[in-house]
Image (tube, rainbow, N blue to C red; front, side):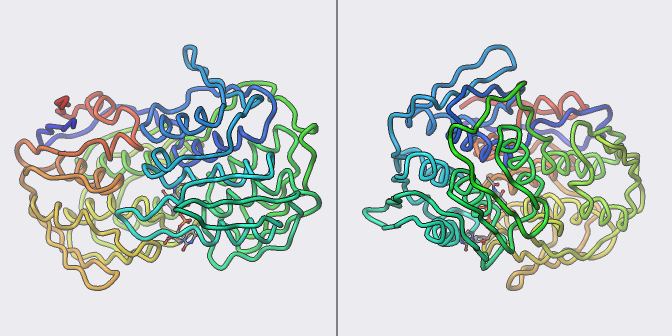
Length: 421
Ligand code: UD1
């Protein structure tokens, strides 16, 4: 298992280019199942999760190849509708093949993804949506067995604006007969990108980005080839991580290649904390900021504060003046970074779903262990400012969602060594 050795403290300076968003890439690659044409992608992020979804798609018979920065997925010859446990268990987003398989082939057998470190994360809302569209669903031997004589548009009200369920239902509804109206839909920018990707191929979707999405079903023959390679949006979570890294180190960094509107809530909170930010159309320039102070946040579905930035924000709050309060409302067990960060000297008390943080003047390096993707990012952030050499273990969590993070931080002036294991 690889580990990172990070020597702090450092001051980050320069420019960093943000990669395409993991959370948009995964559903978009699953959506390629809906097309009988080859689809080309420009600069997919090199991430472990993207490799996993590629393996799952290949196991269904989707052909995939990469030449330079263009990756092609061709689902014209799908031979299987079975997504196996051995692949699905490693990544929850794998369940996003369900909607497209069912819509195009009227049958799908997809392993239940199971729980994960940050919470139970059931898929009941995904299944409710498929049933409303006319699918018969059975759970057998750990698999979702879904079949239909043909999906039919429906009026679906989600009990919670689940990101994955919105995506799965939207993809299924593209090839359903008639109109689907999805209410209380999630509004995350990654869902917008998925809708734009489908619309570019002829899908009839409107209202994405609001809580009511309307999808008018079309026939498979109406799906058109894309006129040029698709470029997925920049990763707002990666961008937030680098912005926070710059602030924590008192650095001067231009974070470019994403849409700052996708991070409005986070940027507003950072400004409240005294961060000096210049916000452009596709960049944020973090200027050296002094006297950063605490804040109070609660995670919420978009456009609220993203749960995927909660751990990184807590890393920042750990070293600013005064106290902060963070309430996690999306996942039930997403404070696993807290005991690891405490090993570096942070002062955080947990009570139910809230964390009470007291800023400290200094952190000290320590060996720490990654527990999940964003918790790992928080540990990297702390180690950038901690005195001495920290050893970050189980870096594979980080590699799931951050493309070349060690290289990008090194280019900004951090001292990081990856030890292959
Ligand atoms: C997506 C993101 C993830 C992010 C999360 C919330 C991807 C690949 N992952 O995950 O990084 O943290 O959104 O912004 O895009 N729930 C149910 N039943 C369901 C579905 C969800 O109870 O059928 C619950 C989950 O357990 C969780 C909450 O709803 O507590 C949010 O989940 P959801 O919005 O579905 O997140 P994901 O799509 O899994």
